[in-house]
Length: 308
Image (tube, rainbow, N blue to C red; front, side):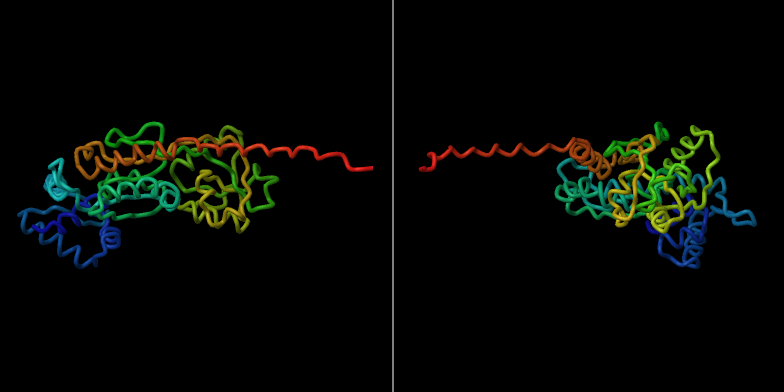
């Protein structure tokens, strides 16, 4: 069995969607189908059932998934090197939103790259709401994302930043922002925070759009579709920041953290990234040091009185 075949099967077993796996793994549907057939031949049993209601794992398929995941994890450990003095190598799959890529990843990855120059990062971006699901499903090794009060038991997180939620409008339209209409994410922490705020006001909001990314949301706000709800960090790093008006409304805040699977903490690559996150958090969470005060200007002594 080829490692690539196992990787494709694990991804497909998580998504149960041939189209999505083909797209995200950069293979044709025909190639993916042949891969599954080849694995079923080698395993001597059917691993997947495809029917009118979609694709499901068979009982043997679930057993094979457990084995394949373990085999890939063992191979990753071998490639990374288990000797404490060995130089780390291999591939590290990381998910982050566009905002996190711009504002948080430099502090995390710059020192990591200096210490482990032979580790190849595979960076994937997308909507914030999908980050933890992709991590929990095994599609990536780590994710930088906003986290709820309680993470799933299978995950652990290290806070890198804390951001509050704000209302945004097209610049010059801040008056009346509280009345809507509203543009909110379709799901995720920001949507949950917006819904709590709507309930606290005792009114049913008019929601005109529910985009799946913050960038799309801000584009609609700039065009005048309505008032948006976003993390302040998103506004600060947006290319449209100078065209937005920010309205404080007490919507709450949440931490942004590096998250990994609890069981992966023993993997050298993941452990090294976790350590780097601890150092990055010290930098990102520390308040900026104010510049020293400028020295007081010396007063020039008064000259002799002018001659009369």
